[in-house]
Image (cartoon, rainbow, N blue to C red; front, top):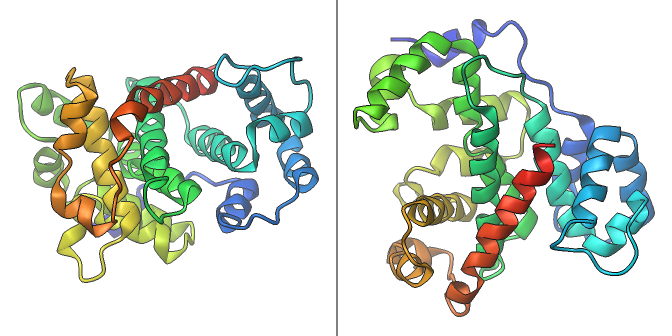
Length: 276
């Protein structure tokens, strides 16, 4: 069995997060960030700028003339939407290509979960961008395991195909699971307590003395994404949300069924934009 500290010693160089992402995470809930200031920061990264403009010109947001600048994109999309796109782009760009690992599928699934978390957050008092970013990061421990222990991860994948649950397979192989690796990485990056708690508690938030509302949203979003993939109808998915989780964050389920397909489509749209 490995110890987490030993796992991190095996990493020659941990992924480095861009300053832009850290600054944006600190600005969540701050509505005073100006369009010009946001556009200037985003404009310093050509790859991310292109994705923001592409999103502004996508079918979901296309109205009138085509957007050609970051400032126009921020105005069309709104600063909150832009911040979410930048978080998705910077986080997905921070990790290298991993041989034999379907990184595109991983991020598309993650984008879907994050978009659902953001949409659900609108029905609670949780900040939408914080919910989105926590959900974007909920699975980063999986990526680090794939980078550091690819052979073991390949064996775990085979075990999962035979029906063994991922958590059990990881714990039997490593002595820990992806959520524990994820929170250790988040602490290495000096993330605030809010983000670390969400990653750490995501598997069973109500088992903690002070449950993280963002962890509850991750749990519900993963459930919703999985259930949709299993072809369950929206009304059944929303009805089957665990009541204790719904009550803890005072989730108002009114209108969720009608919004559900829009959430899924928004996640797919984000995935299409980010994979080009």
